[in-house]
Image (cartoon, rainbow, N blue to C red; front, side, top):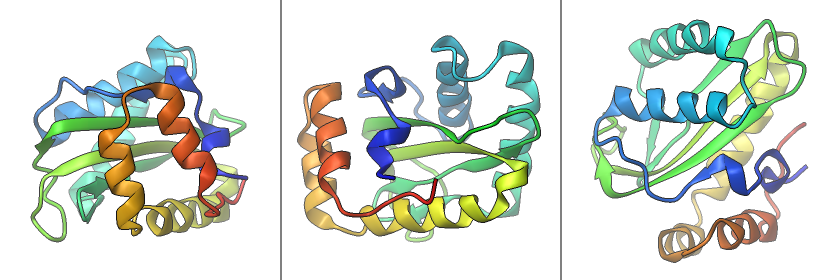
Length: 157
């Protein structure tokens, strides 16, 4: 399955408001709740899970990309949201570069191996400089989805 299958136009934030690492995660999790992907009663639990994950090591993988991820005991399928920051966010990334693209996802705990395949597929797609350039220039949600759909990288779901 392509990353585009995890996302729809409602799951894309073209202009994130957050300018810092933790507020960016809070904004994206809040968007999952606002769009009905994540039940509001699970919001704090997921924020706690993301906080614990980020305290281990930042999910900023470099090249302007971060992939925050966590597990849930309550979900039956992977849920995801894509956010873009034009100004960049200090995510304590491996290369110390500001993050402009964030793919935040939550995986059902029972599907642990899906988490590894999902991470690998997303990371692989974002190593392509042309993809990064096109995502930076995209002006619509549909254009972002088309970029994700055009890449052969598949998510293991």
